Every structure is written in C-alpha cells, then in structure tokens.
Length: 209
Image 1: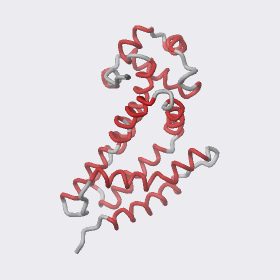
Image 2: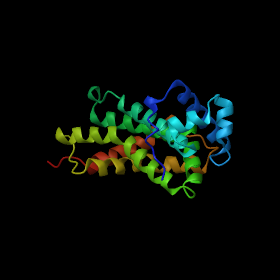
Image 3: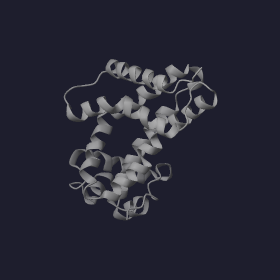
Image 4: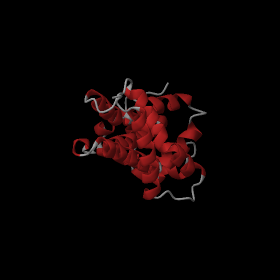
C-alpha cells in the first residue's frame, strides 16, 4: 500500500521542496518508470534518506507532485472574490480558471503521466482520485452551498451539482487538448464554452417561482 502521509507540501523542508521540483521536472521529461531515484538525487543534491523521510518512496514523490498541482488549482479557484460578483459571473470566473488550469501544459502532461502509471499501480489512481479532483472541487461546492442557502439556486446535492458542472465545462476542451496536442485552446474558446455550460447549469438549478 502507498501512503500519502508524507506528502503534505506545506511541511516540506527547503531540501524537500527542491527534491519535489526536481522530481516533477524529471517525471514530465522521462516518465515515471524511466525516472530513477538516482537521477533525482543527482540533480537535486538530496539523498535517499531525504526522499524516504519526506516522501516515503518514488510513488510518494509522484503523489506529492500531483498534490502540489491540485493545491495550486484549488488556491486559484478559492482566491476569486465571489462576494463582489453576481453569481452568474462568479461561477463563470471559477469555471474559466478551472478549465484554464486543466488544459495547461503542466496538468495535461501530468494527466498523461498518471494514465501511464495507474495500470501498474492502481492504488496510486485511487489516492489521486480521492485526494485530487475531489479535493480540488471543494471551493466550488462550498460556493454552490452558499447560493442554495441564500435562495439564489435550488441545489439539493451541492457535491453532485459540482461534479456535473465540472464535467460540463471541461469535457470537450479537455478531450481536445489530450487528443489534439497541436491545436492550442484560446482563452476566447474557453470563455465561450464555459459561458454556455454555466448558463445551462443555472437553468437546471433555478429556483421555481
């Protein structure tokens, strides 16, 4: 079993952060299997003891890399000042930032990396699923709960509604960036797709009068 207890990014030492950044660069460049601990140690100047103490093993390093990206994505979404925006605009801004992150070169590369790793390490897939996307959606879920409590929308299950909205806004664009890597997705395309999806979502959860 793989533990994620050693992957709290905020608790890393400066050496651990350097190891993490090096591992991320090498994983994306060479893949998980072809990146050895020796390669990471050589480039970061760390040691096996440093890796074992802060990450547990190479799988723990991979999880830490992914958790770091989820945290960045979550922080970006949570930083939106929703109280200063009408709910339609707030949801569109949240979803735009979410999709912008999902189609970024870094997250697309990590997605491809995970797909390669999971068949050999299915427990990694489960941990990523539980600690990644589910955690990353929390700020949006909390905002939908606020809208429900304020009587702006009628949402009986905010978590389920969040999942549906996320799939609506990312589905086609994420598939496009995965399958057509040479076709760059513009901010305008993201805005158009997100605006349409959010408008449909709001109609589905509008308060009956």
